[in-house]
Image (cartoon, rainbow, N blue to C red):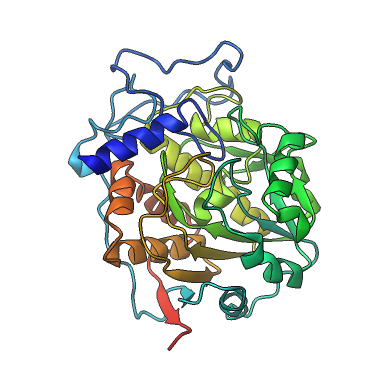
Length: 374
């Protein structure tokens, strides 16, 4: 009961937000649509019809605000440990050493050179958040790549909603001291294609994305009030989406601004489809690192997030975004103190993003774990 109350409180803390993080609006009856402030509402896209609920999504047609309590159990994705010895599975490297040296070690294990101008995609953390990746942890790696830290503005109206404010938060959190910081939608958005998606045919990203030849998705793995968890897939989908692109994903391809949100499963699938677009944009010139430290049930975009509920686990690296998130989730489920985050993941059907990401062809849920500590 206490954990359920904590989840509700963390949702209320960021009620009404969408974007780099968004909490679910207050529960509504099935006949109600989500409440949208007049200044933020927008008509659905004429080119993309509003997604219709189906038995696949397990939710009523008029349900909104990411309420999934009525979802039939058979529509919930069950956890399966995907660690394997199959040599055809992608490798995920792991170290328990959460330090600048450990971060560099696990990244170097990839043996993969990011060429040209390197974008390092992180979350700068909402103003007031206490769990984001610290500059002193990531600085050596970012500088070794001569990387530029990249972010996009949020669609919710808080400290990172505009470029000037966002850059101030980045400075306050110490990121401008270790590298240049680029808010990629400072000059608007561009569209990149999505192929084979259920909800999206294009992903709307910051226009500066084309300034970069390669990307390191450097993700803080943690819980999320709406996605269940946030890792590599969230970092390159919602994280790379521009302000309007965030609305596009949250609305499952029906609105480019405001808070027109659709049921949970379309949102999760839309995140996976947007991740496909960014992964395919860079091709072989994208790598993934997940840092499992300061693990809270809340995202770094929550201003006053719940404190970490479990011990630090370590750092992972892979060339496969589905595999690295799958391995990270398995670590949470295997941990003796992971029950609160497991509850958050399952309460939001968070594993669906892995399933749909694999279906989209971004990567594999199965993985081989190489422990660099052994």
